Length: 202
Image (cartoon, rainbow, N blue to C red; front, side, top):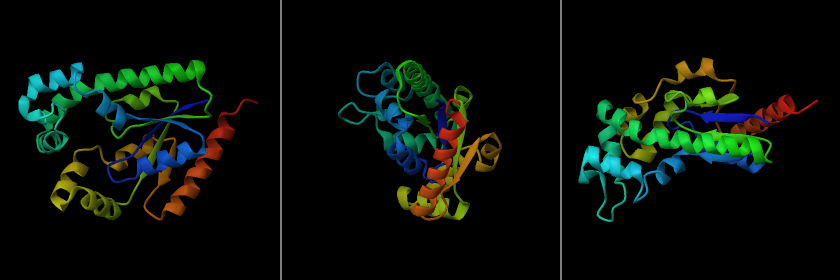
């Protein structure tokens, strides 16, 4: 059965789609969670981050100060590239191991790798299929502003990613999450059924 890369720009709702796929029976690897795990206290990645960005990168308890780092990397592309260069190799290693384990022992009908920067990092080339969650720009801005607190911050985060229009031609399947949850759920179910049927052995 295929390994599916699930991606979408900020505010697209890819995590919502990932939860729906998990409920249908997919095994889901959330690379956002992996990103948190690889910078936990005591990890080599966190040590590298501190060496590059200084103690300002850490909270008093020694954990990564995510708010401060987010503010930095979304205003300074060079800082973002430096942080990604530290964290993404570890995320990629965990992803590759998960795929290898699934190929050998997996009993779920699909393995879904959920990653916001899948195309930007070239990780989509490791996948059998790429599924893209899309959203219209107005809805995207409303969602991100509601989450991040200001339209300025929302636009900064949105502009830091590859435009959705450039990702669409690379996708095998597209799920539009601009509407209601029920509309999205119907698309996810339809996409699931097609994927399972297409990849089932004769």
